[in-house]
Image (cartoon, rainbow, N blue to C red; front, side, top):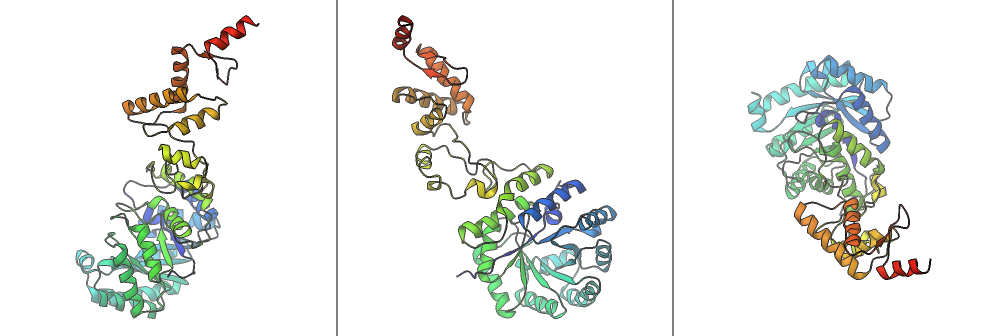
Length: 404
């Protein structure tokens, strides 16, 4: 059973999100992202990596000087030089990342002794400059369990405010995530843990929920799941999974999600998939006849998410190969045009045929073209209004002419 403690989200779009290959945010874009995140109610940001150099430090300082209301941290390697660079930024705290898996330690020419030898001095140095210091266990999902437990206990003993457990290569599944955190919390029942999920297996959002089930309450996320390789857990997806899937209120203004998501996609030059959960263009769209017929009676019959709750408007139906007569009739009724059953069937048939031939949906303008062509072919149209087309039969036309 999930606890009722709401999850806490640490947004790392400006750090891990910008580490996605080819992504670069300028200062104006970073400011705008921060504005949207504050509007959403995000209370903590990992705001950058000072060790990248003077330009990054300058950007971080500018973001801090803007006076946003969230807590800020800078990401650091376990190096004194990184802590010194972070001191120039004015952030509330730092996050210091240590490699903890054998494969990562070996690739960096380090070992477990090096980790423990450096933790005391690095954490002590950080605590002299910052009141908030979090420690990262990088590649924790592949670390040797006893070493990971000792690492966590040591970091807490040295004064770390929180421990980040990172699934750095995204190898966890929901079952393994819950097992990992259950074992960690058995060894350190009161450890203040954070989970940093990656999406290499498409499991990041699900793994966040599994970690929460095991007792974790802090989660680092990015807008759109932007990040290395397949990215991170997506802020908007994780929040809506809690809100709608588990009925756990997160205290986040979800109406910000659509403009925030689309802005980040634009400035990151990472277009959203049309079917991306929550904010994809077609994620609340409907074409299939059985769906559209039910939705006309109750939108919730085939749609979980209320469009207004994520800052969107409900979409009109999509017309194509799978459309039904009810959606065609609904479309024309909104134009004050009543179709006979036979005429509706003719329009639907041509919509299906054209969609199949062109392998795409049919636009509303194309539907009107189909409608007008059918009227012309049957000599059954009269235009009484430049906006609204009214259909009548040849007999009615003749009758009107005779009586005029």
